[in-house]
Structures are given as C-alpha cells and as structure tokens.
Image: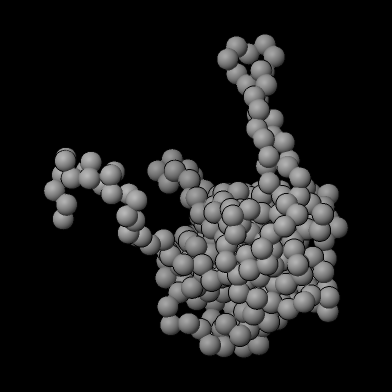
Length: 290
C-alpha cells in the first residue's frame, strides 16, 4: 500500500478528481501536496472510474450503494481510496468521516483540459471544490489546458498520455503552500487553470472572470435513428472549431494567452431583477409577498 509519510500533521488535506483514481494528473497533484512544508496529512479519495462532467452531483442517495476500496497508487499519501461514485460524493463522505477526519482543505485535479467558461458549471473537478465549501471546507480546483484540443473542458485519452504535469504540479504546490500557511477565515472556492507549457514560458498569473465559452465547444447535436429500434435515436455531437478570440480578462482567454488563471468563485446568491417584475407580479396574484 501507499507509504505513510504524512502523519501527526497540523492539517488534513483531501485530494480528489473527476477522472478516476488512476489518472496521472491526480497522482501528480497528490505527490505535490505531500511535498508541502509542514507535514500535512494527505489522503486521496477519488472515483473508481471516469466522472468528467458530473459537476457537483451526488447521485440518488436513497438508491445508490457506494463501495469504497483501499487502492495502491504511486502516491506517498497517508491513504488512498477509490469510491464508486462522483467526486462530490467523495468529498461528502470525507466530511462525514468515512476517511477519518475532519478535513481542513480539499484539492481537486489536475484535470486534463481547461475548466473555463461554461465548462465550470459542469466540471466534476470544480464540483468537488464547491461541495467542500458546502461542508464549510475550502476547496481548490486545478486544471491544465491542452494545446490544440479539448472540448467543453474534456480531452481524449490519447492526448492525456502526452501531457507533462510538472508545471501544473509546481503551481499547485506553490499556491496551496501559501494557502495553508494563512488559511482564510471563511471557506473559499478557487478555480485555477494552467497553460500547457513550462512555468518558464508562462507570462504570469491573473485574476479572471468566468467567461461564457470554453476554447472549444460542442457545436451541434443531431439525432440519428437506431437501426431496428422504433422511436430510438443516437445523438451525434459535432465538435465546433476553436474559438479564436476569448477576452484575456476571462479565465479561458487568460489561459489561451499564456497566463495562469485564478478565479475566486462566489456562492450562489439572490439577485434583485427589475426585469422579472411581471413574473413576480403573477405570483402576487396567487400568494402574498412576504
């Protein structure tokens, strides 16, 4: 089993992802966390298979029967576990004590493919960090862009095999070291995206807004009849062309330009909208406004 090198630590840090327990990006991230100064206890708990695009989904808790297994991966963590469920479920189980506890921080990634623009809403990598904050724990999500391809924050396996994770791991270790040395008083969620290049070739880092589009999108979805099955159709998706111009003040534009993108994600909050008055007036006719 994994070597126990992070005992008697001032913090317990959970490392998870949405690509599965055997993903190389997860291993690079977990080992970077074990290199943190301070001897923090690192525990890995990740899905047993691919859960990209799962967002912050848990599944139907009254119906699922998750299984947790000890696994041996090339990581010097205190413990490594696989879970038959989404990354958010891994985080929820961690909060509830399945892997000891309590945890002080959740680190998610490294995702192959930038989680920027609308991909942020569906990302299991980001979803794990959001779920952490729901449990009053800070979460940081790390993703690495893939030069030339990557659709809606996801990439093909053959491209993953070609990635060098060192730069993203170095940035993750540096950022998290600063975070654990001076933790915020209130839980935060940070979404960090790293260009696919060595640190020496990056232009710097910047705070960014969440944009509207990822660098490459799903452009079209059409239905094709399933042969021999009446009324059934398969969905054929068309991968759109690369978006040529993304504003550099957005997460996707910054990464495309060669910057590390750092986005501090807010909570979901109510917004008063004057242009919703008609719909709200309709409710007034049915119920009194409190």
